Amino acid sequence: MSRIFGVPVASVYPHYVTKVTKKGRTEDELVEVITWLTGFDHDELQRHLAEETTFEDFFAAAHLNPNASLITGSVCGVKVQEVDDPLMQKIRYLDKLVDELAKGRPMDKVLRA
Image (cartoon, rainbow, N blue to C red; front, top):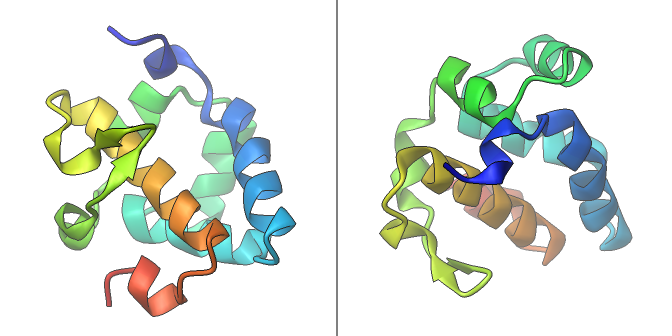
């Protein structure tokens, strides 16, 4: 089991915010990306952050977007579509979406519209 599985999403979230805002995107756009991927609404996301839900429990409670399988490409040199562990793949999907948002990709493309 990977160490990241037991890490609270709330401990990584500020790094996501910093990454996207440094590149001119907003926290609201980040929230939109996370809620698109997980199926959580804004309040549910805030509750998970406040309760320091681990990545494992966060994604266990999520209803992954049916278009999540359209997320492809590499994160840290690993192709997200080739990650074997289902939980690790979901975490990599999130990382990839945050990367795309930070790189200025149009929101409709990030959300696989």
